[in-house]
Image (cartoon, rainbow, N blue to C red; front, side, top):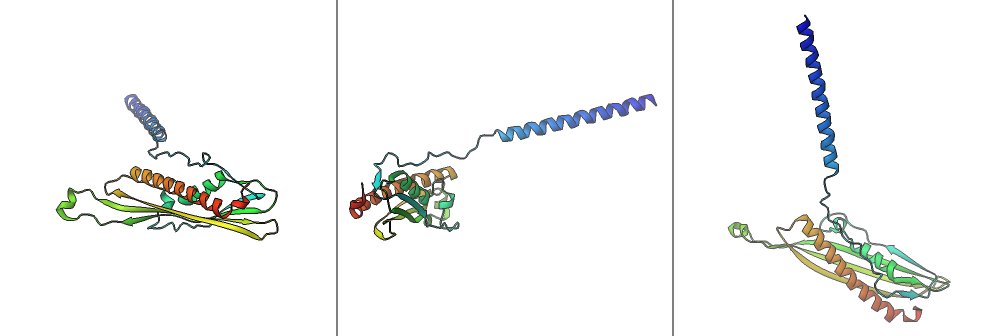
Length: 209
């Protein structure tokens, strides 16, 4: 009887130790999972503060994003680390300045798309040893600046657009695509900034302070 109780007690102690060991390992596993480095790439914030500001003879500057992402193929701007429309908005906030006492300026982002276009790739046995360019990505930014007087009357406007394309290989990783999307949108945004600034200085020169 005593031997039986001893064996039963040993079994209970062993089970308790096993449970504690299991819980310890589970907690350690969760902790390890929480500290696993995030494989997602980090990209620098795109800014335009290095460009000369444009002081406008208005009391306020508003920025309106009119572009609505389809959130479906072939558009991929919602998956990119930097959306074209967001880049255009950032340009307006960094460069356009209210330097007057009346009236307002409204910058409209009218388009900011990033579209994936499938390309023809090699098939058959040759395709097994060939790395083709599988997709072409096309980034487009369009915008318009409207100026209004204190009485609400429109004084003038300027508009611009910029587009760029870039292909990518069929064996590209997700990180490769993310980098391509970012650099493509960045380059397109800089093109747009130059075009838009030129248009403003040509069409709205009288309203620049």
